[in-house]
Image 1: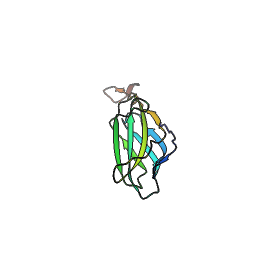
Image 2 (image 1 turned 180 degrees about the vertical axis):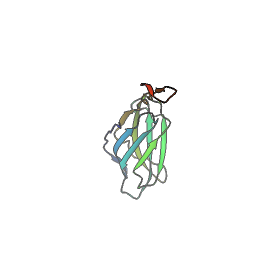
Image 3 (image 1 turned 30 degrees about the vertical axis):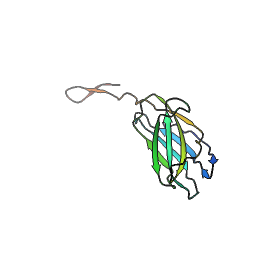
Image 4 (image 1 turned 60 degrees about the vertical axis):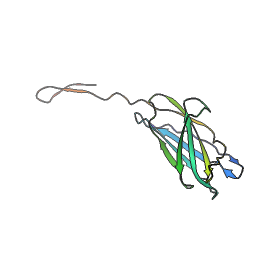
Length: 128
């Protein structure tokens, strides 16, 4: 089951911030999918997704190229860990907007797989 979180946007110094719409994670994937409304100003050339395991203390950044980009997947996350995300838009010189409102998402653990024990003739003996 995917979790959905919603964000708002900000605008600063001529560079508009993105409006993030959702953040979702699939069990066992080790990734979170973020989606937002792209900024309409031609000054924006891309976005940066800032994230970490503490609120407003971002230790990692993912660069997303393209003003019209509207989604990205952050990968290689630990299962059952809470991550905090915020997005900025940036111009060609690297100047960033203010951070979007922060969203949080806990990457779910993959449920245990089902096991089946069969007899020599193929009959199911046990199913967990």
